[in-house]
Image (cartoon, rainbow, N blue to C red; front, side, top):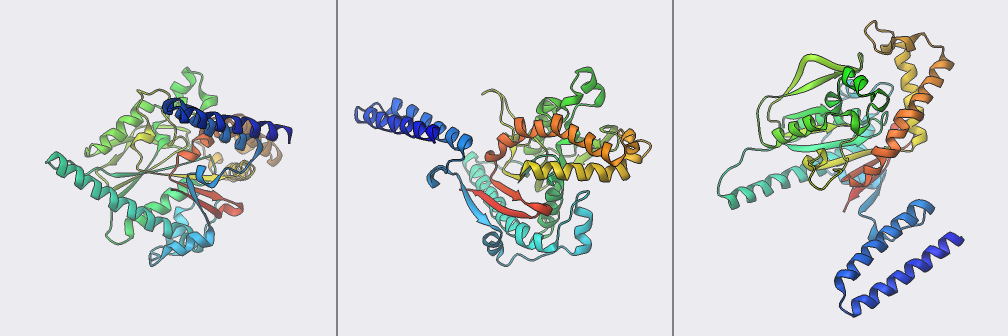
Length: 359
C-alpha cells in the first residue's frame, strides 16, 4: 500500500511537471517526460498488478464467445479425420475449438492478406513498375510445449482451403538452430532454444529471399529424434502466397538499431500464451509420453531417458524446464508477447480462453 501511494504521488508530480513545461512551450522536453511517465506506469503495473488505463492498453480483449461471434459465414473445411494428424504430441483439440477460435482468425487473416495485396498495388503504381509477388508472412511464437506447431498446422490447412485456394508453406525456426557440433564447440548446448543458439544471419537471409520473390529456396531440416540438423536434406520453398514461420523467438526485437531481425519480415504475428505452471505441466506430460515412444528409438538423442523410472523422468523433466525452457521463456520469449498482433491465451486442456487483438 505504501509502495502504491508513493508511486501515485510520484506519477502525479511528473504529470503536473509535464503540464507546466508544456505551458512554456517546452514540447520536446514535455514529450520526453510524458514517455517516461508511460514507462513508470508500465513498471508499476508489472510489479504490483495495478490496472492500467484502457487508453494505455494496445489490445482489444475478447472472450471465447465474443470471438466466436466474429466467425460470420466462414465454412469449416476440416473433419475430425483431417484434424487428428495436425495435433501435437499429447495434445487434444476438438472441431469446436477450430470453429470457435480458428475460423474467426482465418476471416481476420484474409482481410489482412487482401489489404496487403492492395498496398502492394499502390506501391507498384507509385514506382511505375511491377515488383515480384512477395509472400505474406505469418509468425507464430510462444513457449516450448504451448502448442505452436498445432496452431501453425491448423492455420496452414484452413488458409489453404478457404475461398480461392492458396499456396501456404510452413517453416519452423528449428531448422536454423546451429548443428549440435557447433553448439558443443561454443559450449551452448545448455542454451539450445535461446536466441544465441540460432544461426540468425541464415534465417534473416532466408526471409529476405522469400520477400524478394526468389524461387526454390532451400531451408535446413531439423530432426527432433536426433536433436540435430539433418545433413544434406532440405525443404524447398517456392514462392508461396503465405508463409507461416513458427518458432520460439520469432518476435524477438533487434539488439541494435542497425540490425535487421526476423520480426522485421513478419506481416502478422501470433503469440500463443499460457500460464507457466500449465506450460511446465504440459512439458512434463509430453516428456513422459516421449519416454514411452520416441526416446526408445535406437537413433534417439535421448534414448538414455527411456530407461528412467517415472519418478526419475519427472525429476529430469522438471530440471530441464527449470534450467533451460522456463528460463528461456522468462528471459527471451515472454518479453516479446506484447509485440504480437494477436495473443491466444490458453487455459487447461489447451483450450483458448482469451484473445487479444492489437488495436
